[in-house]
Length: 264
Image 1 (cartoon, helix red, strand yellow):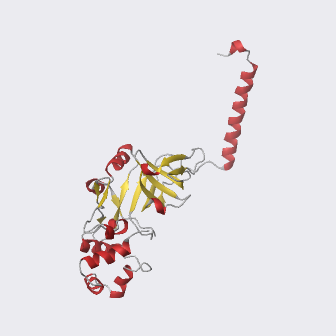
Image 2 (cartoon, helix red, strand yellow; image 1 turned 90 degrees about the vertical axis):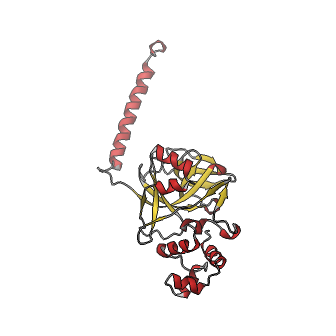
Image 3 (cartoon, helix red, strand yellow; image 1 turned 90 degrees about the horizontal axis):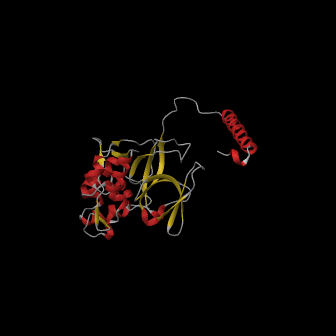
């Protein structure tokens, strides 16, 4: 769950502003704004959300992820004695721009070290990417490397929405940011850990302690490169496997025909 509706209501009341006054300032009908504070209502579009965040002097991301009702007058969330801010960039139309974390070692190591540094987040490349992703919450794009999640190829870009541990769903795919690396895996929750599972069965599952994970991003969409040539057909794969088996059998037969003194 996110905290948007309760935050909108709490922050508005803290500023002693009525729903009607908020609606007027945002050029909305009162009923439209009121629906934003209703858990069964609508999520504000990005342009409206940006205006609300500026009014309350908070970030758009924190409206979803920070429970301001338990923070009192503070506008920050303290985690391990570090203040975590949530900078959000927008274009001229007020549309949120999504941060992109490239797949290079330097970029991913930098993200692990500085993911809570507003200056670092602002320095990330950004794009406007919607493509029908209507799930609310903070979004980020990660470029992946490796073949563990084939058929999604290496160097694809994964759009993820931020999730908390309690919101994780078994067997769904997530970007998992740990203290050591950034992984794209399906997850399975255990008591104090998570199992990371690859779609490519060649890669064995990994177990990670829950307290070693810094962030979870539920995978929503992927951008992949179109291959420059057709991939192998099933027939081609069968031929290759048969040829490999024949070569292995030849080697085994040769080894079997050698006497002990000939093993060199």
